[in-house]
Amino acid sequence: MNRRTLLKGVAVGSIVPATSVATTPAGAQDGGTSSDDSNPDDAEPDDTAPGPDEADNGPVSVRIVEIPEAVTGGALLDWTVEVENPTDEPIRPTIEYTVDGESLGTVTLTVDPGETVQPTAPSYQTEPVATADSVTVRVEANGDSDERTVQILPTQELDEALQFPAPELTVEPETTVHFEVGAVDPDAPQTTTWWVDGERVGDTFADPWQGTYFFEQDAHYWQETFEAQGTSEVVAGVDVDGEQYRASWTVTVAPGGLADPTIEAARPEAGILEFDREDPSPTTLEIDVADPDGNLDRVVWWLTQADAILGVSEVSGASDTATLTVDDDLCHTCVVVPWVITGDGTFTSEFLWEVDDVDVDFGEPDDDPSEPDDPTDPDDPGVEPDDPADPDDPDEPVKEPEQPRDEPKGSRDRHDGPHTDPEKPDDKHDQHGSDDAKPRDDHTKTKASDSTPDGDCST
Image (cartoon, rainbow, N blue to C red):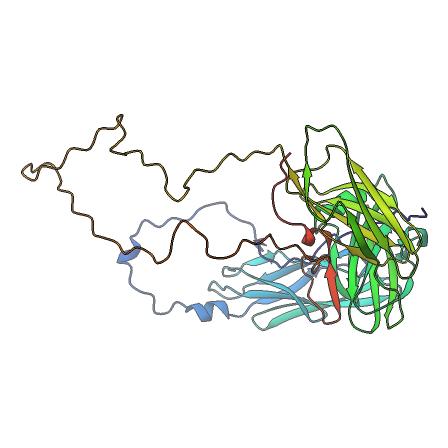
């Protein structure tokens, strides 16, 4: 199989709202601590003290004191801000950070009279660019502001051999595409950030399947479902030990384009898969897969909860059968999820088998679980009944008679509703839960971990 080992990933350096501050006084500190032995309750109210609104909205001076003139597209952009209180009263301003008009968050802090502080500013993940660009960083607080323009330098293009699928493709509406970028240097740390039409949608820290896939397949991945007709650009920013690389794809969505592959049949039948760990015979799983465009490539077999790849099967042509044989790799309640990937990058997946380990014994339930054991059963010869309270004894409390309670309507020992099997998850992944990703009208972001059912993996 001509399989490209590439990389799916969530990008490093997510934009983080500023929530903490580090104060740096303008002058030297004397190191002393003030004390006040007076009782605050005896103090007269200070009618001249500023109210909360006055203190929050007092005049401050805000300025960007450190920021690079230029960074390579894809790198993190950091800066340092100072806030000065020129008055003789404490002020509690709220500082807001924006890049090209987009808010990165706010931070509120108290600035003492005559003090200058440096609140913690957020980092900004720049987008990898093919040509030079720029961004404007702005900080505002209580009517004062400062801003700087930073040049974004072009990013080196990733070797096309490490990019999957081809840089240009046309797909049908509602088609999911699996993108990968491969390991540039296997011995160097590598992270990947993904953008779609200029919007940062995810990075390699989003879920544990990213790390597993990179370890097993030497690649980071992203899966995007294109719903509406039109043209979109998908960009991967690859950071290899501080060096920036860029990979991009142009995806045209139009009738007559590539379509998703399908899973035609599964053996054994999809559903509960009984597994006996004591039985030495292996378990064999098979699926029949088809691609309307005749370019099947591979099937990646995932095991949820364990976040493990059980194997990779090579497939080809318009239809084929993928087979997986496992010994003791399965775990109780884990689900086997095959990914079907074509050579064009189109993609599908389904939750097929939930593992039922027959050796797992949770114990037999009580005959009537609605009636717990009564440790004070008067018929139990080992338990003596309580002596009745003596109303003439002043040292012994008299127990009030219990008031009758209304019995709830309906039986407590039976369920009126029909028994139903657990809902089977959808066969496609839901929105890619990337940190700061926002839903768009024309795309659905997907990731593997979002299609992973919750639960412990019991072996």
